[in-house]
Amino acid sequence: MKTNTNNIVISELCQRHGEKDILKDVSFEAKQGRITAFLGPNGAGKSSTLRILLGLDRSTGTATFGGRKYVTLDTPLKVVGAAFDGIGGNVTRKVKTHLKIIAQSNSIPFCRISEVLKIVGLSDKGKARLGTLSLGEGQRLGLAVAMLGDPQYLVLDEPTNGLDPIGIRWFRKFIRQQRDLGKTVLLSSHILSEVEAVADDVVIINRGKIIAQGELHRVMKNLESLEDVFFSLTEEGESISENFS
Image 1 (cartoon, rainbow, N blue to C red):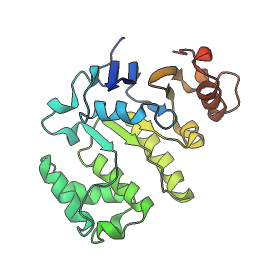
Image 2 (cartoon, helix red, strand yellow):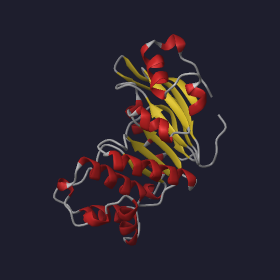
Image 3 (tube, rainbow, N blue to C red):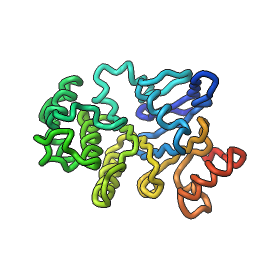
Image 4 (tube, rainbow, N blue to C red):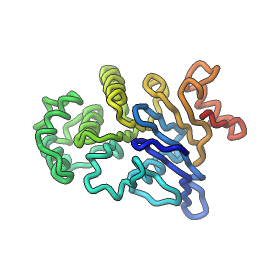
């Protein structure tokens, strides 16, 4: 697999829990300056793959950011921004305090906090306690954390979950801006219409195996929507799966 310096490269990941295969030779690439959507039904292996990529789980194979494993990064937030598994802070802590703790842990200047709050539309929530945020505000705060170190790579799990229509429209603009700045974006989502609106490339996983990948328009081929592609591949079985890259 040809590798760009700023690509996310997943190569031959295999993972077993007991007698069960969770991931079976999972390989794909998320390219710089493009939005790659990682899709699959519940239990297909999406979360396991992302957890391995972020150094939270182990497996055989490799998962790297520009050739580097996440666990080798001294200040990971300056390289990789991840919105994964919720906010993860004490519910009584104020938003700015939460961001200061994270910034300090990665040697990020505190002046960056106001910048990211403005980017995600939470400038008026700096003194709010985490426990008082709505689900959509929590999603935006997760994006603020991901953006703190102005990273090259963004790994986002269900980034539009909880966002209202205005928030979803904002997210589309935000993520396209990040792509246009040359960032490498990998996002996982179950809202297929939203993925179709922003993705350049698509990777579909089912039962621990990659069953389709490639540019969005090529994966969709003659089908009217990404939803049609998704259900035809995941419901009709692996016999029809094809690599579109």
